[in-house]
Image (cartoon, rainbow, N blue to C red):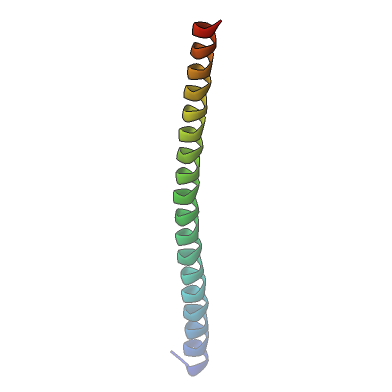
Length: 66
């Protein structure tokens, strides 16, 4: 293998490593965002359930009073 071929192979290797590291970083960010989105969705569901429970309670009080 000539010196030029070694430089080309090394350049390809460097580019491959850089792209691979970039993909790993993006995958980690996507995973983190998915976890945060799942947490936010769960918080929204809990809030909706609590709101619905309050509304049912208020409606029941109105029926008892009225």
